[in-house]
Image 1 (cartoon, one colour):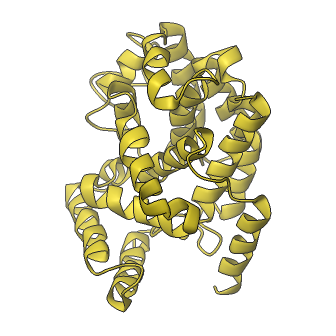
Image 2 (spheres, rainbow, N blue to C red; image 1 turned 180 degrees about the vertical axis):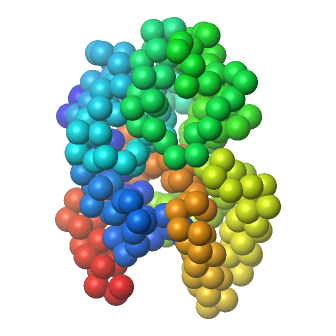
Length: 297
């Protein structure tokens, strides 16, 4: 895939995920005290050309440069998880599918890649990062390759876990869910929301776990499952429950923001677009949807 097309896939995936009205996340009709939809749009503009050149500059360097590009236009972390997920995916050779090529990319990552990623994470300063006994980015230097140090954090972070399991959640679960019964092609926003709900119902969200507690994680899982079981989006009960879920997630400001799930969703959308599993929505269509959402708020 030419770099220009890869850039378009990165950019479009970020915009689609940010625009969809997912419970608890920023979108055109919902903001947090420190960040708004426009910040995510500007961040997508900033990182797309960088990540499109990952094959040339390397995964670690791409992560670092994408974070620097984001920080140059936004003072808050809007996309660190997205960058960490998309950098290895954009390194897969153009003539190889993501599922076939991601293993070689991950096995080829180096300690230098980890050094660049650690620097990027310190620059991004994600909320609720904390410290850990192993693979602690606040330490001066990583103790292994990028794949190795991310694997050490796999039990506490869903983004890191993708490095340990060859991006199973993204390339298996997310892609399958988005593409089931042509869901993404028929209604990309509903497909994205459905994927978010399904991932939270099954796995919770490690961003919520870091900033809140296990009780909130279990409650998020329960509420997401109840939305699906109530027949969202077709049934009225499902539509009522998703609004209740959204209010519950926002009751503590951004603390219950399921941000890690949003990152995984973005990577799943990118995979669908990059491997041409569904048509790419037009920019005009995304803008029209964003305008519609704003007009109803």
